[in-house]
Length: 271
Image 1 (cartoon, rainbow, N blue to C red):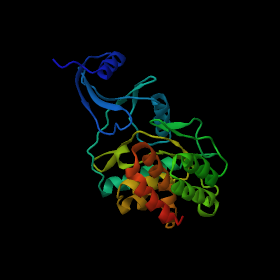
Image 2: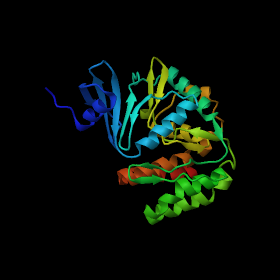
Image 3: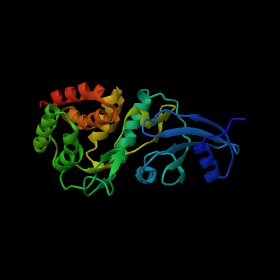
Image 4: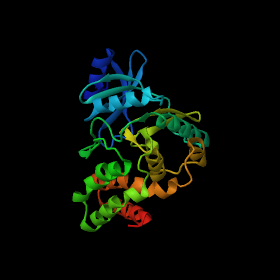
């Protein structure tokens, strides 16, 4: 008989049923994720790590705004148990179109300031979210400049130049949309050409184009995404500015292999 992992034993205790099967899931770069089947027939997804109560709050915010998310079955300081959601892994044209509709609906949830009421983190890397009144200020002071001290001097100088020029490049006060905040394709679950869930949010309020830019950075969205969302024609001009932040995050978390991506994006911004 296979001995359940410590995480599976905690799931069993939290949900009141023995574990019959468990298997690791992808997407656990910054924590452990397992698919767990209980003897009452339920299948759940369990995560262990840090900041999971914060993740649960963010999932709840997305769900309250009408976005599909997994149901939260249990949460504590270092374990989060979610309902398992259908996922065929196929982002075809229909699913891309549905994602555009989902995001348009999510981003229609508008607040009064940019940021969030608590900071976030990617692993050991802090993500400051203190609100600001203008969007260029937020993107400069909360997304780009916090990385400067950790960068090689040449990259640091270029990031500082870009940050200083943001008032001329970004809208001053776009709608403070509710963002997923870490929207690469691995955080979009689909089945039958529809989005079944958005997962692993790093939510805050900002310009809706940020979520679209992230999808374009690590994927190749079908035209149906922008058609369904109603992406402005000039969004491509701002895209490398928004993509520079996740590229910097990857450089700091995963090493020099991402330096080329950061340099390419900075060249695209003209700095």
